[in-house]
Length: 495
Image 1: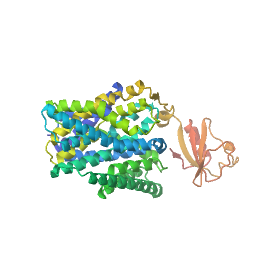
Image 2 (image 1 turned 135 degrees about the vertical axis):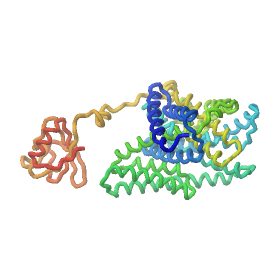
Image 3 (image 1 turned 90 degrees about the vertical axis):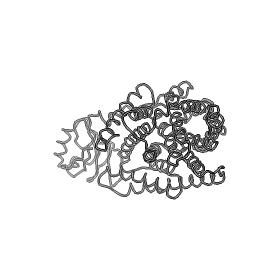
Image 4 (image 1 turned 180 degrees about the horizontal axis):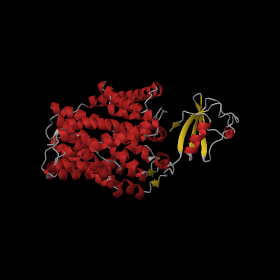
């Protein structure tokens, strides 16, 4: 057992090893999240004792809030608008169809392995695994930097970002039924609960998103770093308040992220970089925790291993394709190859494992075995589907190489040129009030002018006024600083 005085040391070592494992995974084309999971399992086997399902649930809740919000924030609404119909259908009806098919499969197959699993418990097992995992899909699709034809990338990201609420509702409902010993599931109550949670979650997510945009643009904080803190607090406020009023918090934070990401924001780049880094941290911690929680001896139990492999294969080859084909049947714009690819990229990841902790916390009989089976299915999905995301797209002729900016890295790290901001004074305008009249060193450009809150890109004949703010780019920063002194400019802001 790790003492509290060694907690930071162990945590730091785990994070460093996980990051290095992620680099190895990228090199060999494996999902980094699978390696994070493996690191947790390795340390949990001999070095660290961890068995708190409640703490895992809490960590999962925090991580999913950040992952879903960041995923929504990075998604352009113009890209998902053409695929909203099929995306929503996959996220709702597709999840339900998958759960019903897998639940029936488990119910009929388990007796052949000497297991007695009731249909409600089989349906609970299937429900926990019925949604595709947003963390896995966002991570793999964006790390690969591979384009997909027929709007498949926004479709997959929309589905994975919005289908957790359906699986969550089904899981919570069935946990309640099994914990109370009821024999039947109330279909009417289930439908009512679903619509209430989805509608309330969507409305509050939009409202909180718009409110967050308004506050960030109006608050005028002197320290730019605090904008990220404010945005982070708004994410947790959105989730907790929505859940408090019986809405679905996960849907709310995803929609809030969509709203925030598709509006102009003060310090938007700073907040985006912060959330990208924080999202990766949350994913690493989440998968490490899940790896620590599993017991390898239970995972390699005969019944768990065989049933897990059967369910994993059935979901990949039968349940997911059937659900996708039925949901996309009304949308003829998708080719058969596109439907086949959507069927294949139905990755399971952290979300099913987190949902599988709910039966454990509720002390439902057979919950430990259910958790181990879900864990086994997740590993199979990441191994089989996660490693073939790019390969399957190439095989089906749906992939194309995304163009990468030649200036992206240069602007951040490699560019020797420097940006400065100065205010035009009367001395600068003594030789004339046009931009071309101002003496500046060679290899120096005035790339933007700010005048009374309005911005424009100037040409050589642009007339300047005292008080204008200039954004200047130069390769000769020392010469430029000397020129500023000749102009009598003491306040130079280096950007």
